[in-house]
Image (cartoon, rainbow, N blue to C red; front, side, top):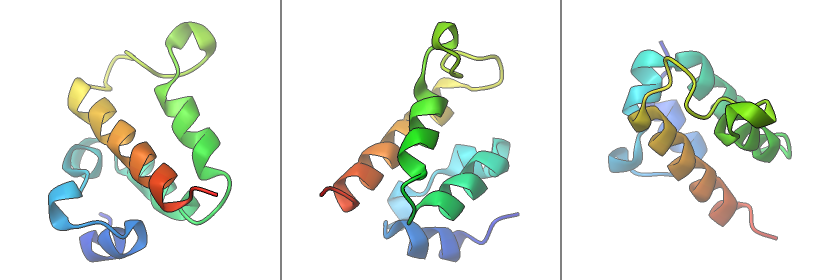
Length: 85
């Protein structure tokens, strides 16, 4: 299990923004996001997670419910705001 406080600290977000579904159902995705957060590899990772299946991505993939997709999108937007150049 991932440390919630460490996630909040790394992502620089408040508890209401915590990706609960990812933590519970897709901890490997959340772990990757945290590991990549301060690297340039985070943006391509988010893009891969959010691409349609026909493009080689995972959008609408079985086992990736709407809530998880929404959390990934919110994290991508948070990342983009924090890392805008």
